[in-house]
Image (cartoon, rainbow, N blue to C red):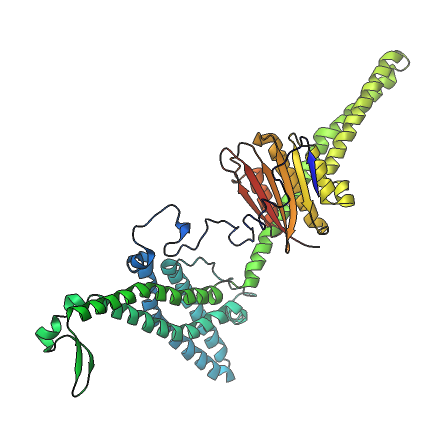
Length: 476
């Protein structure tokens, strides 16, 4: 349903013609639909305006990232041997001693050592692979002393994941080391063959690198064509090596994130704790705002009204005309106080939102905006009251920003559902430059949306237009 307020124009000629999730970018919480976002790999567009003269396959063997990844693979084997040996030895010893009480502290020592190796692996992955990850959840002993620490180690799922990583990383490190070193060595050796093939006739007594040989027949790479083809084959190996190493290290990155990072449950708990703090702070701020509005607005008017009525009562017998005038003024104050109370109640939770839903409530907000606003709400059903309230106050605050700060002459509000997400978009043709920096109203709005797993995306270049898109979870 579309409704126009003010002048008879809007931003779009048809419903959904400029919505994320339809013709525009979709805001799915992963990359926010940014067409300029790409993986910062070889030749990726996400590196900004930087341009390279060499194509990515020719540039890759000389890039610092390729050498860091190759160094990661080379270091992985000796560290894998050390971790595997420690883990298997300590776990075997601890399991064998479980018949006695000594097996428990030995297992705890094994888990503690694996956690130490895990910290080293995370640092190595951050430094050489650029893996961004948090540390796992810390130990939480239920008391003090060695027994409490041992129990915390044995109960911690992160400790057992570190042990699993110490075991499974070794065979993968052997494979990665063998493949990466073989491709690297053969590639550079064949590529530089024209520079060192003379070693064979001078020092080895043969024409060149032997390709095939038996008791009666031998094939050597010795003529210019064969030497050139060998170098070209080496070039192919050299160009392919960084990509092969990158594929190998991507598996390492997955193992590090999955086994050495925080679990999904722990990450979710941290997010919920943070969101709970935001919700508590927001509720406290709202209570302070309501108290301030009541104290400075309606309460002050009611106090003045009581004083005026008291004076009118005293003058009623002495000067009826003055008393009537004071009663008339008090009547006007009553109307003003009632209007302020209505506005305050509307700011807490408007009755029209409960009775008629988002369409009618947003239409009422748009009618009070200082610029013409087109409202379009396309929802198959009403969302949960909590989500509906957040959506209402989000649009209300954005339209207040349009009225106060944008300098716009028209605006539009679109609300629709895409799969299990509720999307809101407010667009104005103002001067732009909106920024959700710390301390601004948009920053607080983004925090409120984040508390319910929502997203706020602002596109406001200098000169406008401003497009603010909010995404909320759909809860029916």
